[in-house]
Amino acid sequence: MDLPLLEQTLRERGEPAFRARQVWEWTARGASGYDAMTNLPRTLRSELAEVVPFSTLDVETERESRDGTVKTLFRTADGHPVEAVLMRYRDGRRSLCLSSQSGCPLTCTFCATGAMAFGRNLTASEILDQALHFRRLTQVDHAVFMGMGEPMLNLDEVLSAARRLPDLGITHRRTTISTVGWLPGLRRFVDEVGEPIRLALSLHAADDELRSRIMPVNERYPVAEVVAECRRQAEATRRRVFVEYVMLAGVNDAPEQARALAELLGRDHFKVNLIPYNPWAASVGGEADARPNTPPTAAGAASVGGEADARPNTPPKAAGGLYEGSSRDRIAAFRHELERARVPVTVRLTRGRDIEAACGQLAAAPRVRRRSAPSSQPAPARRPAAGAPRSRT
Ligand code: SAH
Image (tube, rainbow, N blue to C red; front, side, top):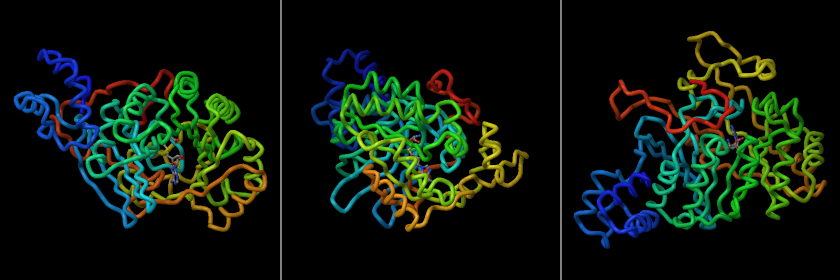
């Protein structure tokens, strides 16, 4: 629901100030539409239904995994794809994985979202509507901003959405915002966010040379600065920052790399989450042609040379196909090294892989279907923060 539009509509109609809150409370508790809001005058309900669409997002497809994970592909009103995931765990936990952007302007070489065209930042309402969609299906209690996009490039809208999640049943302590380490946003997060929202850092390599090769953003914001900023957060909040580390066979999974990681992080401020690599090249398939095959930096180009085929119209060879996931033994050995160094570590349970809903597998064709007239170009609601890499469309 477009909340600014709701408020404006109610104001123009001369409604009392509490109306917007009433509508929001019903919505946050999983109401199926305005009709269900029985403490609102009937005429107001039908007028709202006409003027303020109940959701800013249309559901395009929804798939359910064998493990109960649900992945939904939405479209914004101007045609951008957005994916979000509901994970249901045996212990009853219901966790949402939310997107902050349609696509992503960063180009992490192992991530499917980075291989699709970047669309735009999502508004707070569009982020909340992902969560509200699942709230209408079930109670929810956790949320991670680990879907499409880089939250720190869209921090204001992400925070504005995160601040309303408690109304859906998701407390700040059960909300996690994940970042590649985009420093301008990350600094603001550390300085400005008073709520106990958890921070997660997608690190994936402990040294600049390797990290720049697999995550070009590292050229701009190197490991030491990013880790220092996260340490500042851990000290200020006395809560550990989660470190995500995707296990790529023969790339970042050697025991000495685990020791270097332990050395970098220390015992007190971080908890490492080892993520089994989720393959995606096959699933992205023809859609990957939106990816300019040349990585944005020279270092990146050199490193992923095999897939750096910049010729137009050649069949896409997605970067995801470059990698293989580390074996279980290799992951166990890596974990063991961290444990020996007394760095807290867990191995992430992979969910929803059979429906391409697992980490790094979210990607969708940029413009399959558009509701608005084909001539109208979707205008970005908001540009990425100054200094953001240019869209790769
Ligand atoms: N841009 C933010 C939010 C996305 S989080 C960030 O990167 O932190 C998505 C997480 O999934 C990140 O930790 C990302 O590195 C990880 N990931 C990406 N591709 C993956 C893959 N193919 N397999 C497993 N994890 C992957």
